[in-house]
Length: 122
Image (tube, rainbow, N blue to C red):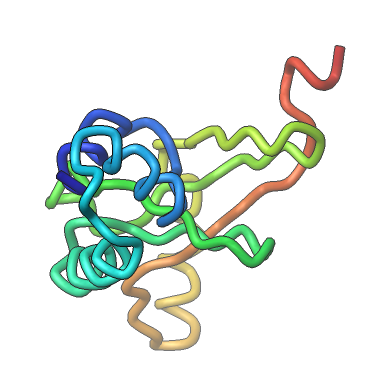
């Protein structure tokens, strides 16, 4: 039921509590602790990605592309909290330079840009 919700909302960044509320519509017997445990297991096996916006709430998104080795970037509106995904890996040249200069193998990176979305700028 949890995976079904993640698939149905694959463009959203849902918290455990939001997932719980959505799952309960069809599975009213499910408990919040079960959703937490399920999210932890899905994270451990690499089926979901965590998004921490430094606001005390972890959000999740399903990882549909197993060949994707990097997280995508996120644009976060400081006014309405809208989250926009940037699919392009904009840091490839910077990563290559870091690896060359520092002899450091980069596995992943996490980039968040904060600002105002198009609607809030109006």
